Amino acid sequence: MRQFIKGMDLCEDFYNEIAKPILNNHFPGLQYTAGLLGYGSDVLGFDDETSTDHMWGPRFYLFLPETDIKWKNEIMDIFSREFPYEYRGYSVNFSSPDPNDKMVRISKRISDGPVSPLIIIHTINEYLKAYLGTNNLNALSSQDWLSFSEHRLLALTSGKLFIDNLNLKDLLAKIGFYPEQVKLYLIASNWSLIAEEQAFVKRCSDVGDEIGSILACSRIAERLMRLAFLYCNQYAPYSKWFGTAFQRLPVDPEIKQNISRALTAKNIQQREYHLVHAQKLMADWHNSLNLTEFVPIKIENYFSRHIQVIFADKLAKATVKKLQNTELENYPLIGTLSEIANFAALTENLFYQDNVKALYQPNTAVVHEA
Image (cartoon, rainbow, N blue to C red; front, side, top):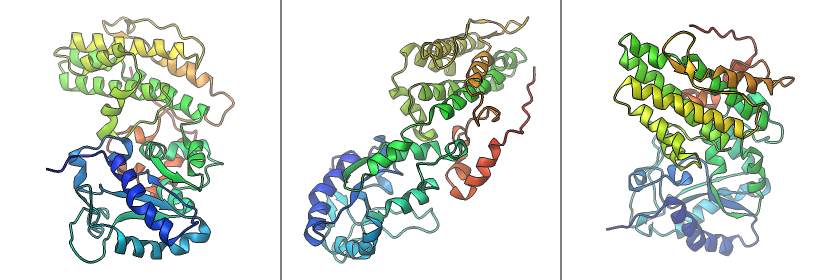
């Protein structure tokens, strides 16, 4: 039985043992960058045997200078002739892109004829333009940052370059994480969104709406988890890997435990207790980072009601204060569309990128309900 090997290791070894000698032989002196980045659970290190059913296997990106992209077809022809049919038990040949399934390719074993490998050749500029919507990483506006797919930012910066003659690593360092002002805006947004529902977990339950209470708890829990990514200066992946990545963050175990216990609570007493304590611990973490002025936080009743809150809006207001005299000062506190699960139709489609930017025009009224 074939032994599973992590995709990143498989691809790096495939490049070094198979592709690199071929390139050295046919194109001595060619300057290029090769590595694995962008789409794929293997890029993030989350892949397992299940991941191998499509768009996974011996593969890599090959980036050529503008002056040498003319060799793209010849390089692919040589790869097709000289690549082996399989490598470490995995097919090197792949099916044609499926036009009815987002151009997905699956491994397809063959025993004769040319190989159709999962190798993608680009210039750096054309790849960034196609994947991120821009190749000008030196002049990004706040709206640019907020319109980017956070998962794509993670996928670009979490990959590994096996060789980097073109200094792609230095270019990607420019998007290593959100600029400080954008980070603060996202922190303010998440605390504001928590504040909008902080009393609803108990309020829903009080009127017999346990489903509504659980849903409100889940939304707040997710916002707390997103704050953890921001405080750790790490991009969050999309929903499939969100919880997995959160568990790997260097976060106080007590925060993780309280979030988990709130989500799995059997009754409203446990749910409220653990959720509000998770908020208090997150607020203490916020204060310890000195991102804003110190915000006095305690667990207290929501006005005269028997509902426990920390008045999370205090943290949002303190963070917004740090955005004074910046272009983000009057942005609506909505975070990014990447923070809404299942919005991939918008966040992953660059056709809508300009429309997404328009959301941040500072003329949106926010209505707060008691």
